[in-house]
Length: 204
Length: 307
Image 1 (tube, chains in turn cyan, blue):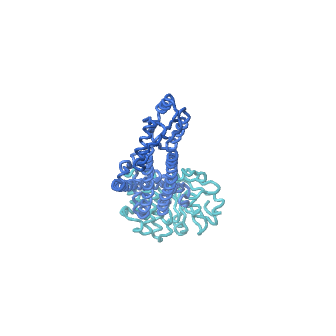
Image 2 (spheres, chains in turn green, orange; image 1 turned 90 degrees about the vertical axis):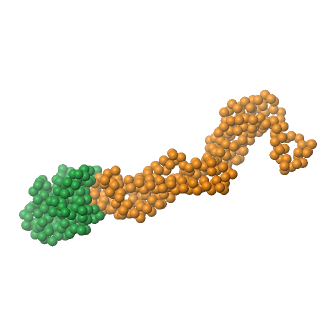
Image 3 (cartoon, helix red, strand yellow; image 1 turned 30 degrees about the vertical axis):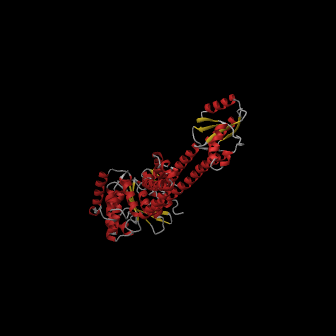
């Protein structure tokens, strides 16, 4: 059993960190709340969707309501930065004019407006993470979930990325970040939820 | 077709050109055999039907048959609606024909004063419609049974053995055609399915990412199904072209070497309907083969793990 007796509420508009050692269950919890895995028992409610009872056809609807940032970025290597960032809008069928405008705006927000035509491999790790964040934000999700978003970055870049998340949170988006970077968590002074051996031990 | 679909198709062709070409070639071969079968079936039946048109229905009369009985037999044949002509052949006419046909082989026969006339008078009837199926053969057998029971009729001949073999041949050909076509079309499903499966494997990461950002099943599967359908359609178009080239070639051979059979005039290329059938088969089986290989992907929950 990866998680047990977990009882956790994050309020709308809140920014919170999930910390814990490797194997504590952070990724499992992260996969549950991003509808990557289905819980075997209990209830998981995110952005108005009860994920435990989510039907297959409702999964895409839910995923369009959240934004997800992965530690390994999960960018499409053969696609341009523009195409990667446009993905959430493309899958919901937005008109190309709107897509172009919003991609330009969000890339401007993360400081990569000039890299639209590049491929991910032409970007540094920090830039790729910012592209991943831009993709997670472009459809204005109700909740932004990030799994170790600074795991591959140096301390300076990590701080920049965290500042970006704070900006997003300031605009009203709920932000939930799984990280093992204790220093960053301490400096930000936000709510910290600590998990170990599948159970929440602090910040419930 | 959406820009997403077009981009997806273009990317798939660019990234899996070798697999796509191999699939197209194998599928073209398969559909060429299907098209050739339709072609052969239509023309084989046409040629056999032409031969079936020449089936003679002969009713041999008893020597003692009265004029009324002969008239009744004639009326029965004419009113049956099965014959385009009914000709009476007298004993004398039959003997004369026999002498003419056998004279060259046996000159003594013509000079033999003792030669009697063992041949009966008969009616020779030509069928209105040829024997082109087992059912039309059964109608002929039934008719013969009714004619032979008429007073004054001694025997009925319609090349029973030959016609029976011929009707069986038609049946065997039709049955074997369907079996072979079924096998080939099932094979085409597997061929397309494998090509699409290879494309899915090559795009596993992309599919997973699409799903994670809210792509629906059909957003993911649609381009793959259209890709399969297009491969099938292109293959069927190529197969019809190949079949036409083969047809032209065989026409030339038939005219040059087998002209005396008149086959070149009998044999025709696929009809518009048959061409449409081949194209629809290509399109349909391409889409179906593709669907069968993608039906388990993009089902919602952790879909990428089920690829």
